[in-house]
Length: 418
Image 1: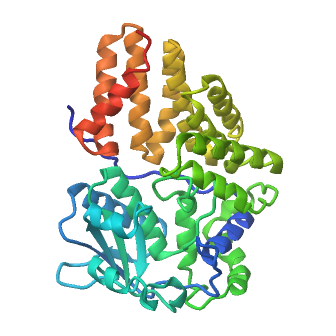
Image 2: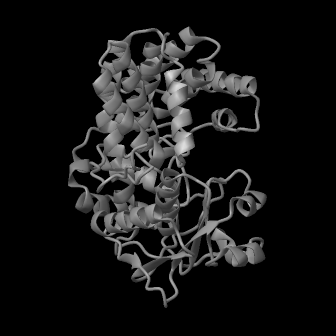
Image 3: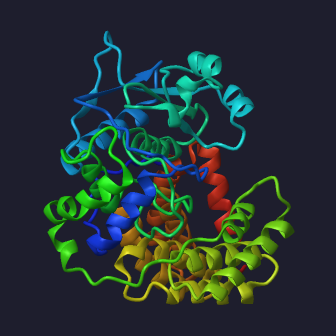
């Protein structure tokens, strides 16, 4: 087994959408919670922000945390640093034994709450107003909780998502194609859009107590200063409100408690709703992606059709190149199982740049495994071995243990025609 690989500094591009669209996204993210509850005003930290890890985190988490804090300082302009061991911190990151975590939050991957700094305090006050976001007037203390048995990439993903929420918006929007503030989980590190939103969130013109109306009045000026290119970006038609019926169907597709047939039926409902609304955005693509994955074992033809239809949405949409790369991986796996080795290699190669830029080790490792198997089919044995070793280095970061990495490799190898 090769050593675990880790990503270097992230290089994300600026958002490509218009400032008018971004302003609307900012308002919908900042003045509503995921539950649908309306927030009457903004809350945020005042002054420098400190972060610490409780206990002894794995070295990968410390490395990824340092990289993230550096990005927040440089890209979002937020004065945030790690606290010294002897001092308290505004944001505490806690690794929690998996069993304890799942007993209290069985469906959560990780989460952040205000008003506490450690697990014992959260257990004591989790039903108290101190941990209720709606009672906040300003942010002073936050705690992030992550299960201690997840892979290095899952820990890093939790850092990005929960630290962004601890600092800024509390909502997620399925309509966003270029953001971590989206429950579709395509993006796992903060994007250029996300950094712009956080930079705007801490603009001097906004403060604790700012209402939606006041923010709406200030945002055009703020975004024009921070993102001049967005003033000239071509605007698209306003995105329609996402109906609860579609969200419900999508959440069923990702609910592990549901049977496979129930999840597949939910994906079909989501696709039908998306088509009936005439959407040509990430919501339709996500519906088709789920349908393709959930029908692949039963109906490869339908899955292939769903993946190709999803890809057609991405043409000319640079903000959706990561989604295109993840679907291309699915098509490369189908090509490999069909014996189309060169097609699989071409598809794998086309997806690599977006996956490396987005630092998606899960999909990256699987794409490289597919490419290695395809090279073996063409008798390029030495190159296949080199690519396979590369894939395993990323798989150890993506999936954690050596066994998990090798199991994923065996699953890809099983697709190869014998």
